[in-house]
Image 1 (cartoon, rainbow, N blue to C red):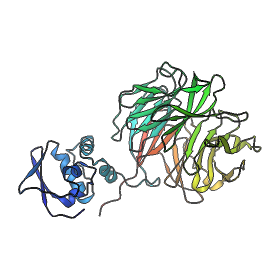
Image 2: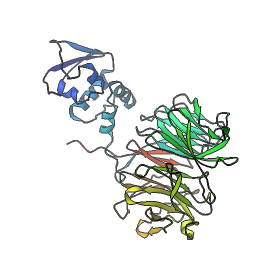
Image 3: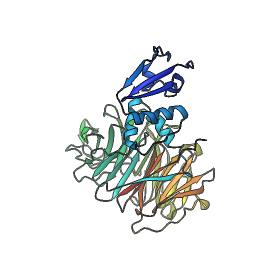
Image 4: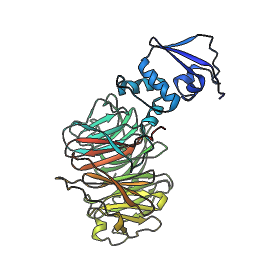
Length: 441
């Protein structure tokens, strides 16, 4: 891309703006300005020619300044949501996001906003989208918010409790619930995040018959496969696999004696090993079951439970688990607020509890929630009661804690699009934590 010194003139809503081709080149080819000129950015503008754009001139001035110096300064007379809409028109929304949010760092997160009053009843789950939006489940209701935190029409499952939700893309949300979802036999469906309409159900087929089932935990793989733990009425207990694009069932990993797959609380796809982590946790089961399933060989390649080795009381009461492939381990957290690590290189190994990782105690809420774990950008996060702790380094040392003064217990949290979303159970509210941008000198 050659650097040109041509002056470019725009008439935006009646106001004249002058800039250069070099400044516009900062927008990139996949933007309004990239499409305005030819592939080589060869501006063949005649003298004093203006490009007329029938859009908001105040927002154009902010976006043009962003292309000039990389800084986002929004004057008081420009509503933020209007600026975001204009940025989407010009294809500059990613530029705005990069200027508004710094690189995600759990130790630098600031509380940017709290959203209240989503729905009656306790919170169930929250899932972040890669674009910075999120979907939230309260009982039988699911609410979807885009990156601008504008709420779409709510999804109502008619008093059927939502077990899990999955952010598919900006247009679709996956919901797992009890059987008879959408007046059919399936317990999982793809819904439009804009209209709330059920687009299609995911059926479980056994012996050429569609079976009734309850769908629980969900997970996704990069090749657009959907995994769900399924609890059926006869022998269709296990993990189902569907094609996200077509909605067709492509595989099913049936539960064998001694396994606990159909009621799994946690599924996690591991890209490095092409395996699925399946965890059934306390108190759903008296003893915990964590395993890795290889669907190509139809085998369980790793497991940790009381079958493989006797478990201590601490190990039996694991509340959440997450695989950490780079460390060849699974991190678990128990009801005593301790972090533990299980070596993936050994079947049925014991838990190495880390005393230095003991979570910081916050104020005990009236109704404490089970802890949750997340791993993002090499940092480990764990919710406990009304706060989220951040651990860093090879020894997972506690480095910071996220907490605000009201809202009660955190029942779930999720990270995506450079944001951390924390859902509180008691006051029906979720918080948005963001990393502030590095100051422009």
